Length: 309
Image (cartoon, rainbow, N blue to C red; front, side, top):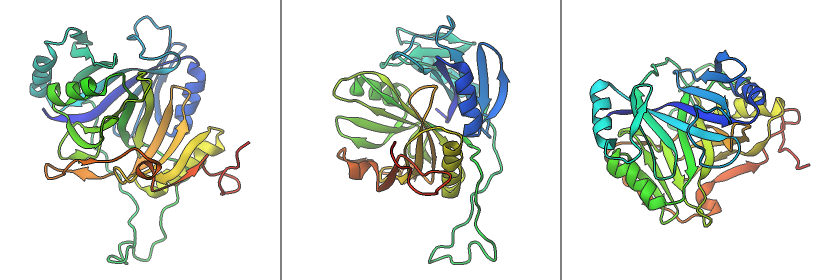
């Protein structure tokens, strides 16, 4: 199956106006907003839909409070959609959402599939003058971003109640590939090969509670991670951790608390995997999570690590 990535996510939120303000500051394009629903999109057309938690049209929540309620995965064309429909038709929860095949995954999350509505975008990151390419950026200063403009929704991360069952659904039924693992604790999954290191990360904690951990938004380069993080700090949103860099996936990151649920992440420079990629096992540790990181973020005004209050 030719999956193209995450086409749309839907959150059930307790404070719609606060979430609208967050996504405006986060750098998404506002498509529409009314008293009940808000729709935003990234540069490539990936959609974020915000609804009140008590909206009867929302699927059941996997946890209390503001959180994600539904994920739409994109496929290349109608032939691929037909294959997905056949693959999931045997699921007890099988149904149709807006005429597209849908079901509930083993973690209780509502998912559906559609021919992608995303589109190609012509954006470029800033070249870096490395030792072997000292003139990649010739006679030009590097880029400094005043804010971020996310290119796409890069991946979603969930706490799961049953790691083995959830992994089996996405690998055996849908055909996702395993990029890396925390054995017995977490699995990094990519929906397409070749493709970015992970489209989804599933993590089982000792309490085995289902929930949203974060949604990650791809930006152009490391400088946009910095510029975006500083801008959201200026707007008053709280950084959990970042900037930093992950040893698993190699990506640079910045995590911010999101009123729509859990965390939002800016990230860039993740590993790109072909069928030659060999999955690895990592033990969960601080060293595996971060090569380096700034706790609490950087203060926009001082340009130093934010001092805990």
